[in-house]
Length: 392
Ligand code: AMX
Image (cartoon, rainbow, N blue to C red):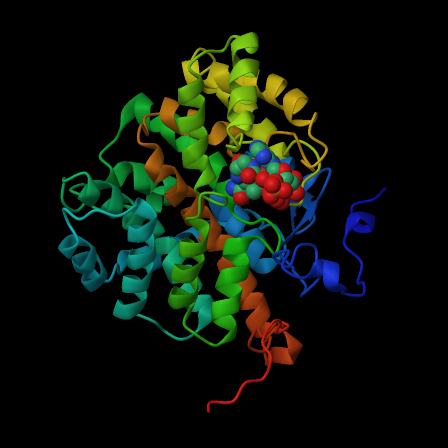
């Protein structure tokens, strides 16, 4: 079966489709990527495994322009992003500074930070705003990490010409071999997480808000709030915490652990998916990268054993549509191995990546219908148990 044959076909909606979270119901078109249930996500037709080693900047170009750049275009695009990063609106960083020491989850900070960038400077042109936001994400991310850690705003001056990930690591003040591994893992992480079709919760939420012609920043901030949920983006945080709770790479002990979690009605993090019906190729790509970077890391060894054991146990329950590993199974172990030891920050990397795909999809929706754009979202809810009443 070809990938296109696996695309959903239009069908009649019946009562069984209600209250299922719009599961599988076609609502629009997506030009950036599609998810084959068996082969995973494809960006503009390219299987994700073919793109995993490419530069984040080239993949941003791909998602925006719907083709890969040639060498000159690649250089020009990176220069354009670097130029856009020069002018970081200081007002936005001051808003974040005023939140310290402050609590909340790092995803709350990311959402506020994106909203603050929009308050400081919105052009109203979704393409320009998208590229400005993408260009400024490294400094925003580094500022969130450092401010929350009590270190103030980044001390190393921003150097956007290094590249997006390279500048982020530089802004954190990390250099040398430690920086090299971090950069390698983060570049792959960003590429793998940039887009995943049109209907995932955060992308859908961002496009939904943008359809009311809210600013790109307001839409993106909403998307980040959607991503922060534990069944969606925050699963990568939960995943490492889950792996750390297992604490052993002995397959028999892992199997007993998985069974006891299921008996306690707790999710087996890193497994299952709403659309995929096979192991996510993004899981395989990260496990392969871990084999190069941190083969002896304890968490990584647990992930490798869990990947073998958990699907067998999950497959015993016919309700579970996909017992195989998803994208989150190994990302936390890799991030931890290269020096990011606090799992609550992991979802912000997911958010950083997803800003790209969501922006590209919002631009596509604004350009739809001959430039009139997709109309404001308005699905239908059917009123039930509400007999007409009159006040006496
Ligand atoms: N562990 C335990 N139970 C699971 C499971 C898992 N890994 N995967 C599915 N199930 C359960 C569901 O909770 C559901 O139970 P219910 O009927 O009592 O509500 C039933 O099996 C059928 O679910 P499904 O149709 O196979 O999947 P779904 O679309 O409802 O849920 C997902 C998908 C990802 C939320 C689910 O597989 C899950 O909770 N996985 C663990 C959390 C996780 O790793 N999330 C990351 C997903 C990727 C991402 O968005 N970042």
